[in-house]
Length: 357
Ligand SMILES: [Zn+2]
Image (tube, rainbow, N blue to C red):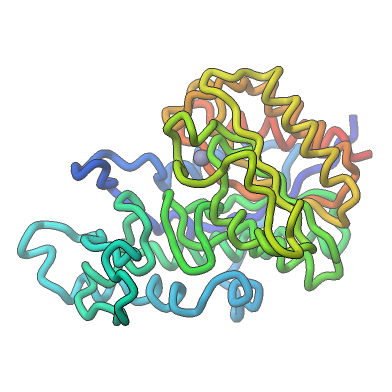
């Protein structure tokens, strides 16, 4: 077919984050966002439809600075050392940063709250759940994922019709000043800002991960120059991110109308899911560039969601978004079933690439 070979931007440093376990409802459970995800995806993309590019650490990251508040980046960059210097491993055998207190308005109640000195209390200033832990390699891996997203966006700014960032840990749950949902830094938003710096004035984000990308939604909720559309399992049915991701959240201020959430019931399969993807593809069609938050955890075998999308469904989603004709960056988000993960990513990218011609 002479199909377009999709550039795959990846970094070995993305393997440095090893969460080991999560703390879920107060007990340790096995983490699913593991470094082996990188290799599962690389293995599936090691054929002529793809071109692997290894990304070097960036010297500066202006896009990251425009996405996140400096205090979050500072915390993530120092938390593992602060934790290791504390008594936690000797005392209770915990070698990962786990928040113990969350200074929400329920606690501070209008009082002038200070940053906590003890890192186990300070962590709750930025972490909004207990399952997203920080270990010795976490920050380096999160920066490497950001660099992959930025490199993919740079290729697209320079004329590539599609590039894929093998970003891990994922990013779409990372908010301007917070981390959670296995995400630390928002890779998709970094791709958006690199595209903007490269001349794209209006950018559409389509998030096909099984979960609404509350971090990306928050970053762009009041912005008129960036559309955020997501299809995901209904948070109202008891799924992450639980408190946001509902259909009546449509943006605010000059960003009114720039957000769309399309929640779907548990058990939804290809047909209805693809109708939502087609709806979002049409909605972003007038933009100058597209960022796809490519989570493949909506697949039937995935342990993290109850949606029932197939590999053919992901291939068709790629075709629908590729048919917008927009220059596009696909950024890896979730997807946790190792035996099928790589094939699902490949299916999406092949579908998208087939629309380029
Ligand atoms: Zn997800």
